[in-house]
Length: 174
Image (tube, rainbow, N blue to C red; front, side, top):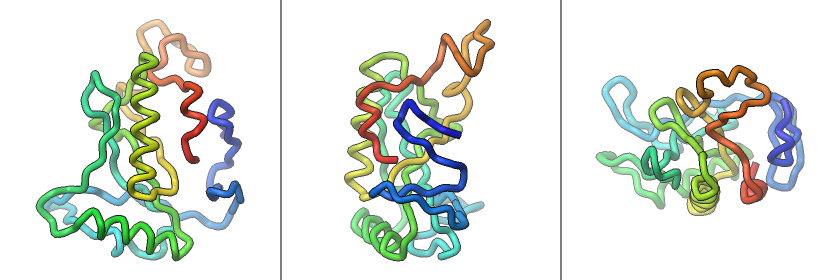
């Protein structure tokens, strides 16, 4: 698949480094959950098995349904600081692995209906990537983020997309 709108031409399973270099080595991708519950206890990022060479941190989410500014905060109730998290990201990157911030998720729809939505989304995503030192981002749009309005049946050329790209998006790190 390609995404010419973002200025990228990336094959499935291909990793593009910050300098534009491509690698087609085997890619093992996994989500790191940023929460703690009985079914899936919290695991520091440093404890993700080394077999995962791309780690997608779940999730940066919009502030609300009407504010597309993305936020990301570490889970509370565990003894894991922002400094430790940033250090773990740097250590993983030093091993040649990638750490991405994943945006969206099943419970946090993204709908970029206005220029203001797109600007808030793009600016806040860049801020999160720079704050934590992520290598880029993963898109996990589900549910209403990708549903078209009734009667809009041409998925390849929708007339009612919930997400469209603007010029600011061209500066997003891929």
